[in-house]
Length: 460
Image (tube, rainbow, N blue to C red; front, side, top):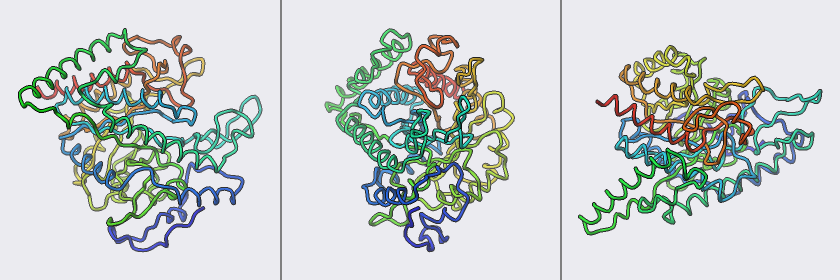
């Protein structure tokens, strides 16, 4: 494992920390590389490569998250459950961007506030697994841990962790982010031309018609304002986009953790917004130790086993100064449990006085397996958890400021229900995910409309 700058008192926290101090703690969900020398060579190379994001982008995101905490913005995080190298191409990336743009436009128009757009892309290449090994037909091999570590094919060669994939992960993330920046800076997100965002495979969808009516209305409003002012509204030609991923592979994250000129502290320059999953959110573990020292805004997933005491401990570790824009709490309880499990956590945060952004992940608590062994999610359960989350925060004097979703712009059938009322027989038609089921375009857009309707109802 790479050894970073020597441990010493962090200038911001006054605590002993370095990018490598996590190595003294138990690190869960890490790959077991058979060749330590090859791993070290890859990490040394990775640590010399250019960063993927900048410190000023990270600090701007922190400011926007702070604004979402006080209700003046809405935080939308969405993308693939797990990226793979084969889909690092222009069509897939563009379609992801289109879905997020369409959802954010629905939310901005309906909520009457700016949306913070955060993609689960340009780095979402590592995945936690429930077991280190997988057995098929009597053969046992290492589990697939995402393209950053090994390959999905069930062969001994494919499943062996390969350090060179860390370099490939950096390259694919860089290409993805560069293309997204080029699209955004080139006017792809221009409100004057929302037709750029249409996906050809849904041109006959009822939701596509509803979205077209919305964009036509916004277009007329933009033209009216420009006519009145006599000037073209140049500030609506581009938008900010940020990247996020679960910071699971700690050697990879450490290699891209850097100091930058004229800034104090350390930044994870692999992504704007890293988060900690449920399986690695151990207060005494390596992931919390790593996360507490970086200046990025950070997220923590809270599941059914979360309790007030553990949550307070996590907040004290990750944000002891209660800095606005620093900490995002992403709850994922499941539609059947959120009503009983979420209120005690809301109260604990309120009593602590901590500054946090509450975000609902209505996906992961509602995963189920069909009788034929296919992982799926029922859209009605996803909707129910989102709707209940909005209501519970309102009832308890809190504020739900965002949504965390697994979705794609591809023509997939992985979650049942939604506008086309997909059932289990439809899953075989276009099930492409190799890890978790994702919302398709129609389901994602329908969920955005549901979010708007629920906030509008509470505002009446």
